[in-house]
Amino acid sequence: MNKKLVIGPKIRRLRRELGLTQTTMAEEMGISTAYLNLIERNQRPVTAQFLVRLAEVYAVDMKSFAQGDDDRLVADLREVFGDPLLAGRGVDVQELKDLAGASPAAADAVTQLYRAYQDAVAKAMELAEKLAEHDRLTGHELVRLPLEDLRDFFHARQNHFPELEEVAEGLWRSMPLRLHEVYDGLRQHLASTYGVTVRIVPRDTMPSDLRRFDPHGRRVLLSEMLPPWGRCFELAHQLALIGHADLLDGLVADSGLATPEARQLCRLALANYFAGALMMPYDRFLAAATELRYDVDVLCQRFGTSFEQTCHRLTTLQRPGARGVPFFLIRVDSAGNISKRFSAGGFHFARFGGACPRWNVHEAFRLPGVIRTQVVQMPDGTTYFSIARTIGRTGTGFHMPEQLLAIGLGCEIGQARQLIYADGHDLGNAAATPIGVNCRLCERQDCNHRALPPLSRRLNINEHRRGISQYAFSAD
Image (tube, rainbow, N blue to C red; front, top):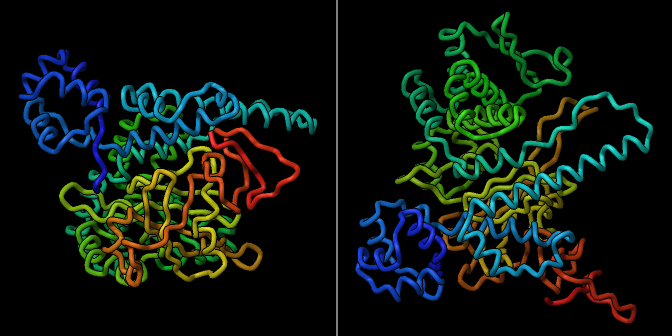
């Protein structure tokens, strides 16, 4: 909270967009040209008074000067320029910060281009493997996975969609729904409003599906293997697809997603968002979360939701004027693969890899079902408080048991006192575990968990020495 705000390139970009000289802007702002020049060259931080005056004179949105997006761009650029293909170019971190600040669109274009390069390499490797194995190619085009585009869209919206929140709250008022009776209310609403019936069917009828919609018979079929919160979520998801298709289509159309696959995934993700908003209506959920100090287990019982559903909902509480703690969330499997991530709290996730092995989200698998707490610190000195716990994803019986996953949920250390999990921690003096984004981006020398050398450093191979890390590398 005490960090100085140095946003010179953004001020310079605004001035140029307005078509002003430094002299003209300085006069309109009531400051000297020399002072404005120092601000634009990042030799002076901006003050609160300066920002207030800027908003008054030019009617700009102060959110556009937040550093979170620049930090994300810099982290992405570091990953790009750490690739062996570019590592020898001598581009330092300050140059990357300058690029992100002066031209975020160009910086984002660089990361998009790198992502396309990574996809092209992956496709080439996949094709080579097929040829090597003498597989017969079917002619189907290998399509780039659209998940990163979708994640960028949700990140740009801060994982908050007021349009969906409004519809969900309207349903609560009009149906009306009651906590712990949402499932019955949704069944009645689907029947009376859309002529859709709901049936719970044996596993043998749907051995590999948990939900199926029959548009001709106007039936939703739910597997008997779904737990109560899963049945409720699937009905709410189906309601979004049946009753609010136009709203979903409008949000998808405005997303800017380029590929049909990304747009289809976006539609399903928005239907999932709606389901969470319906099961945990914003005002009620935020009030309960604040009162209970974000005790996830109690929130699960109060709203009849799962641990993952509740944690996911906590990341969406970003309504202006009624915000919750800005959480980040990650979901990993036992092999370390990341299948879900949201970063309302500014936490940096690797775009092209996994998470740091020193983060206790991986340790959660050692004690399934137990909430673990940890204070972690990123290489830039930013400190976070996080919790981690395993969850089970619904299986279909003995031959396909539930999948064990781990959820990591956290926030900046300055927000941690609002969480019941921080009780007993001396947050001001807590020993933070140093972590990185992932091994390929982390430049910490003294890590015995390192699995790979950093992309941006040259290996130092010495047969006469063995350190705590299996990789030794130069400091610069």
